[in-house]
Image: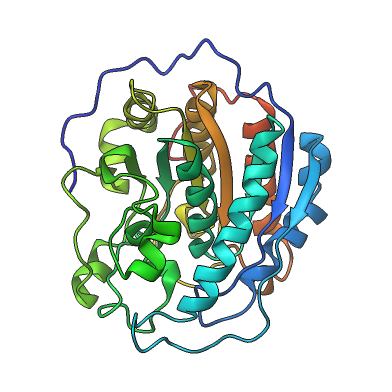
Length: 322
């Protein structure tokens, strides 16, 4: 549930943003949603020059099975068995990048791709998760109207849900709730309407209102302090494009009013990456089919390229600016 007091920590980090080579992994999955379009995210961001701007190696493209579209009667989850079979393949691709001492940049796809990187890291040890998303994604299958895993990925990753998806390779939870920070979500009304289970008390959370109350610098610094405490070997960053303000990122399936500004997301990523403990990042849910002029995708590519390459923003820039 929402914590009222952040950890006190400076937002000035001495370590470099990232001194490892970036490696692109395409994860064009729409297994976690009913619709199509999000699987085109990797191609769209690469067209905007993301790989070139990061001087990144193209490491892999993990194709999804062609036959899917059924809600599993046992788990009540759409494409449950396909997700369970595909996620370890994505985990293998992430593991290969990590074994090369590179920084994986995983381009989704819907949010269910989280299970792949989370599994790769759980195989290696104990890692945290910075979950930057417009939605909390903690539904239980019986409450999710269509059984979409993209609305349940944080629950599955933290061990809440059917074992087929929450206990991959018998390693669940893939990330402990107490090692997770949910950041920037703003879907409380939808959660109440559809009956989503609440976030666990031990899962540190800063919804959008709390981020604004504290200021993005303080909220992000508190999140990073939690994820860099002793006992954790590092943390992974999840970025759902719908965390951004609807005026900036309308090309998503489930739109909500408001959202983080470009500046607020940039500062959050800057603080996280400057900790020196971020192990990788994934980007999800941007749908090029809903972005006819490509402007939303260009903005997303810009913020990712600037943050990952270490380009700084002025901390004095107004945080509420779109």
